Image 1 (tube, rainbow, N blue to C red):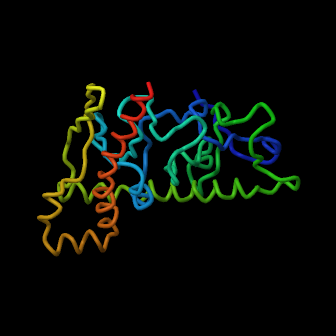
Image 2: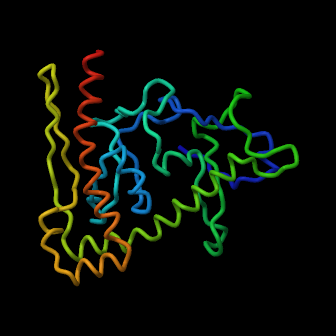
Length: 239
């Protein structure tokens, strides 16, 4: 369940949120939704894969953190072992909500039932003594704006992938040193053969539309699958 409220000084002047990492804050997740605008930052750390919704048939992109539900191999106690966290994770417990009537600019909402909302007097304040947003909240607002814009712009990206049939399903085997094996199934990746086969007009169109860079970043990110296996292996070895 969630309890979304419009963020305001009258109701939330003294509210604090926990900004650290930890399973208790909801960070124990196998993957997170990501937008093409952040693929460049993501590809340095995480594999970027795609998942098709079984009902709508539409694709979304995910940054992988592990190979099974609830597994985040980047989470080490209260530390997140990567310099960049996906925007959808970094903005929690905040989100963009529509104004009444669905018109006008979005508003900053907060999920008061999210585990990051502090009820123990600890955490980071959202407003200063004058009721103005703290630097932390200003940073969150910027990230919310980037995430919202990224979601809105992503439809064109997925349309382009569909137009050139650039997504293919894949299965990834995860063999570990202890002899156990895991399989990653149910995801898609960029079809590199079809990408290489595109002619100059198609590549030019993708570049002009701003889609070519995130495509290349998604391809490059798959080298992180082997690193993720190493993290899994190390975790299993520790028991």
